[in-house]
Image 1: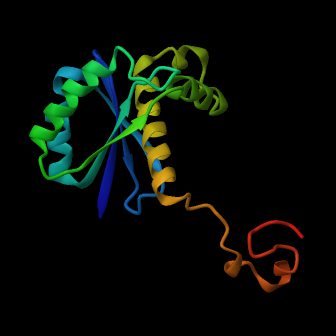
Image 2 (image 1 turned 90 degrees about the vertical axis):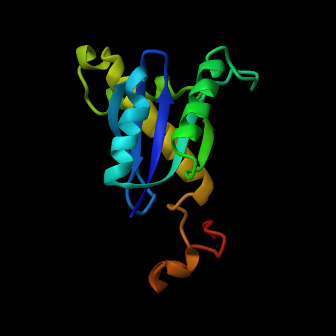
Length: 163
């Protein structure tokens, strides 16, 4: 089954996430030293069929690429050279670190564990990947009114709104 790889690229570390085989859920996978990321991805792609890379693009609040986008562009050229047959998509990574910290808090992680930047990086990669998958799928969690049991169908219109 195909896997999609999510990447939160940084100068020191790279957070890596992976989709489930159905492309519905993203899971944090690993944090890798930047110098070793291509080698890591090659090893991973030998074991699993990778169908796409989704790379977080650092963007300022005004929507323009941030200063760190230059580093990501260099990485993108390395990635495309190493994996010419695998498409690469970019995903806005604004707020992923904030969301990663929130997920860690909500998940009950201790403050000392939340200070671990490696955990933040791989959770950020999972958020980037999940955001991409949700966006391209139109969200797998939207209710199809035709699948609503008859006992509930009178309460829900065809557009999924309460009557």
